[in-house]
Length: 500
Image (cartoon, rainbow, N blue to C red; front, side, top):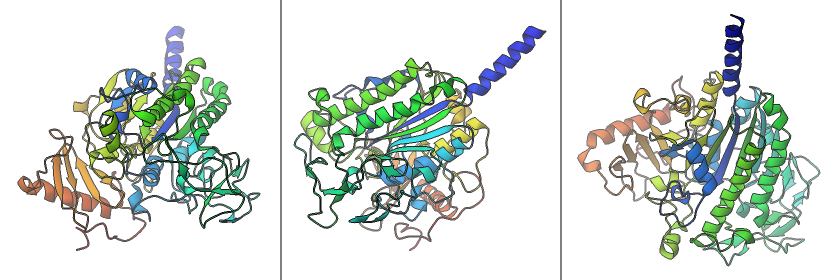
């Protein structure tokens, strides 16, 4: 009897431990579905560490970012809410702006932090920060406000935004070790297609209005190595606690393969897709450093590693087809900024050996907004009514649920950089008119994943039903179950079918 009680207690303890895995969320920048060799058998370079995640975890073959450019996708990832519900209706933010995540809004970090997790972000933020002073008149002795430490993260090391937006320095916490007191602008990058560099020499004073603010020690090519090294340094401080069942959450948003495409010298000449392929090989290498740390610390089993991208590939994907016969968008249509599949269908892999079956696949749609509800379900918590409005848990999928045992995900909304909408339900995708030249389009993705055959003329009832559903999801302020919530603005110009 005593043995039975002991076994029961031990089993319950292990089960509870497994329900609070460590989490590492690796978020790459502008990587297309076809840039992972495990997803694209015709890729012109290999990504062995990304492939390892697929081999040892679950591949979501129909995984999506919530928008098709940097800022809104990052907002959706962290909050479980579509960014077009905010004041940002098109495009991205610069480095300096009021943070798009409102004070008090739940994020992945605040949810996990409130449930015993140590939380950190290392990498590119791009959701707005409040810097001390104004351009050319800074006081860098003062702290940065309205930034990751105010949105649930206990530790921050990284850069404020994409490198073309300036205020470039290595920030730790609320301060830059070396402040961005010099100035520069984009410089030619001879090794990549239509590209630029951010590298010394820098100027003590601006030569033109709105020159980029930069720290004397900042060099673009160092980003990936510095991010990974700093992430591992933070992880080193969490290892002992993690072995004692005190979990950590690391959000690691890399700057690659976003421009500037700048592989380190040791990766030059690898692969067969030019500098871009070399940069992807380097990105994969740094992921491998994180996986090696987990192996060395014997923490891999109960660590959930999530790997995905903020949107599809930059428009240089067209030139890579021409020059290298490499399709960064895989079989899908278009890429970054586009509401078609190549803009938002991205690599989406999760490895969690304690729970997720190695080599498994999920072939139904999931969205990065779904992580908030998934983590809440894992923790046994109910999301507040005003959190995760577009987040649908797929926790049962991670636990091995079969596709025929799961209800279909509620309709998913896609959004292009110029404000065009699409709605996806089951196999059907309705692309809305945009108020300019584009007309409404309908695709059956089960038969036509490349979106080549517009079926709208033959299926008016499906178009009508999906239009009504999209209208409802917008008006209700949410797509997840729950009471109606307010969007942050009244109806706006891109909703042409609603404001005629």
